[in-house]
Length: 180
Image 1 (tube, rainbow, N blue to C red):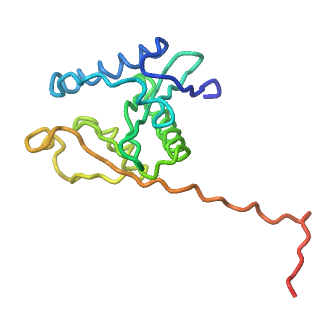
Image 2 (image 1 turned 45 degrees about the vertical axis):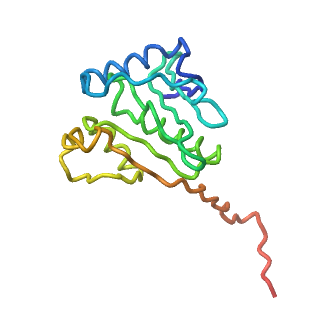
């Protein structure tokens, strides 16, 4: 929407408490205690020059978010891509994903890495439809990845290429000078 704006912030920003809570509530509803509570990461991991944390606001209210942090020298790891459940299927996650890719490219990363859970088919679809390469068998039953030797996470990678610069089309106001 025209009033939507993306801001850069950090995960501990009080403004985004509702979206962080929504994300973790959704994880609990899908997975119960499958993924034991994760150790909290320092918020600095999601700040420049190594990372970024973005939030999409609609009329000042946070409705979607995403982040990345340094995975290695050339790879950014995407994290926390989430959209408010009442606002899904509007392209908001796509907008967040595209923004994260652009910012990772601007920060010099050459590849992206991410994981999603085995019970998130919409996330798998989003990543596959955006050129992410699964590092697992997409034809296997996703629940099988919750059993040993797996840990429930489905990894994806994507190389980041520079966006092609397309020259402006020739216009009649320009004069054509043939080479002789």
